Amino acid sequence: MTRSLTLLGATGSIGASTLDLVRHNRDLWQVEALTANGSAAELAALAREFGAKLAVVGDEACLPQLRAALAGSGIEAAGGRKALCEAAARPVDMTVAAIVGCAGLGPVMAAVERGGTVALANKEALVSAGDVLMQAVRRHGATLLPTDSEHNAIFQCLAGNRIEDVARITLTASGGPLRTWTQAQLDAATPAQAVAHPNWSMGAKISVDSATMMNKGLEYIEAFHLFPVGLEKLGIVVHPQSVIHSMVEFRDRSTLAQLGPSDMRVPIASCLAWPQRMDTPLAPLDLAAIGELTFFPPDEERFPATRLCREAIAAGGGAPAILNAANEVAVAAFLAGQIRFTRIAAMVEETLAHMNAPAPQSLEDVLALDADARARAAAILETSALV
Ligand code: NAD
Ligand code: MG
Image 1 (tube, rainbow, N blue to C red):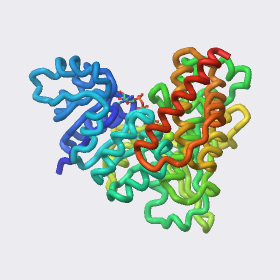
Image 2 (cartoon, protein in one colour):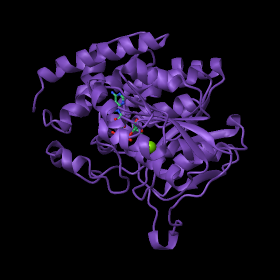
Image 3 (cartoon, rainbow, N blue to C red):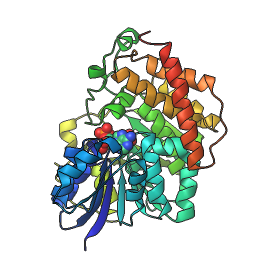
């Protein structure tokens, strides 16, 4: 039986991994809609390859190019923020949410509001909207399948267990490409060095987040919302090999871990086939060849981002949305060569110190707070170029 699929963020890293799985299982999936921000030519080629019914660019200026590239194909083309949400609102069996940043929140909400099954890679949506998004999931009877590898691991470990029996959830972190660098080296880290992840191949933003450890902090907030065990039961351990993707310890001191190759096609496949399993074109895990698994506590002196995230979710209110927005601005500035690597976390901390917002109550509240925090972070950026 074929199932229908919409992929938000089709031209990105998660998008490519998802489409690779679909390519290997063409008889299982019927693609409804594919979206991207720009990259009209690439999106059109994917829409043609997978026989999508609809292709949408978020950047409306790219719509004429998308239309031209789809001419004669019978594939519908659309553009703009509203069109992304309309695409996400179309009924399908599975929505993969793989837009990067808070920009993905509107489309995720649209998929949730029609009570769909959503494989969520877009962690920033959950960090910014937290309670608003989880309440919408419950209200509309949507199913959220965690696609981030750590959360997917936890989700798998929890299957068949009661959340009340959980003693501790431990997120594993690779530590990123700069894990062993001194403070002085970190000050001078370039974008090329920061995005050169040793284990995972990912988009630029999450690669930088991985280097600052902000990614693990965002994942800590993501875990808080997905798995209601309370902050005191959430922890982080650095595990450079990225073989164990996370662990759940129960009250009897039994710990379950999920292991696998560091390839996002594994957690994506687990979501696509849920509650069953599907084949992936990956080599089996060879533990004897890996040899050693090691673990270290996080160093929050050199990598303060996890502390900022722990503090933001403990403070509650609008702090996580402010943190996420400031981080998006700071990472873009770092990638553009405007600020030093170590200014990313500092800019986030300064933005948080300058703002105090109550908990957003609606999607509109989250988006307004996100815009305010971006403006505040941009003002801080003005005064901090290359310091
Ligand atoms: P990416 O940069 O490779 O791709 C992002 C996709 O989103 C692209 O298709 C792009 O066109 C689209 N996009 C970007 N800005 C947009 C906007 N303003 N409006 C509409 N579409 C927009 O990113 P990625 O690495 O694939 O990551 C996607 C999400 O998945 C992120 O939230 C990331 O944190 C999460 N994630 C990624 C990985 C990974 O291995 N890449 C692992 C876990 C979680
Ligand atoms: Mg992850």
